[in-house]
Image (cartoon, rainbow, N blue to C red):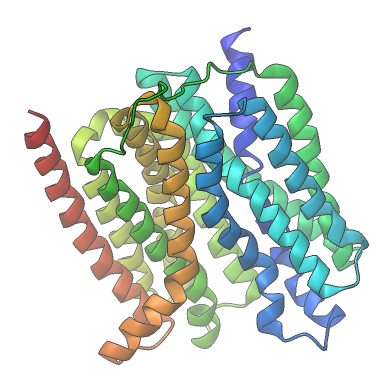
Length: 382
């Protein structure tokens, strides 16, 4: 098999990772279609898949010890397709939510699988570059699914769910082009523990996602509440974050090689700069610059973590380590509103602009934490 074909097969899996975003453009239409359902409950259409990723990403990590990864890909795609497409034919909102849970099961397998396959087939600088491309293709998938959901949703909210047919097409493309990687199993009778040094990476992923969701959950509040922009402007701001992630992903490998052990501290500082610009923004142009910078840091940060995890644990534990990392991120995103609510109550802060200041402080503190952690780990391994 040519390396180009192999790279296509591996990266195509990443394009399915943002499938939950299909419904974002049609949530308002779904609320109109179900007037008797509380709007907060309808918002679970977007939130439930992420919650199920938390529980099923580690399940994927465990199952790699027993099942071929192409079999796991087939199971994941079945859950993704059935859970994604079925709501197009349903009128019972409870069953629609159940299908979104099934979609979350599929995403719980697909998200760690995308990075895990790269660790199977690539090493060294090529692995770093491919992890960055994986992040970029995830961003491309997010843009692709949102555009498809918005276009199809213009014909009716239920039509948006037909966008998940893309996942079936991707599955056949991957299944036909990707070889089965050699299974890395734990020798019988031998016990392998996750090295203690990787727990700081899990914590870092957890906090980074909390910081990132401050933007996603407060951009609309700030722009609309302060009359800086309308719904279209908010959409542009969040799209620019995704575009920033796309650009960052393509250059992630080079950035890792240049910054080396300073990668994570500098990325947190760049993220803090982005939120600082957002906090001091009083024009849309300034805010757009802020979201793009935050997206750039995201596009490099996540693949850098996958690279770090893949070289920090024994080969049989790589899938599980990446799976736990995916869970840590989704836990952070799910609990971000509650964590910020506690902080705002403690310091008398408001939602909107104040949240950006919290993100600046959190980014600086995490930059210090990961810098100290890198120095401590380096001394321990010396």
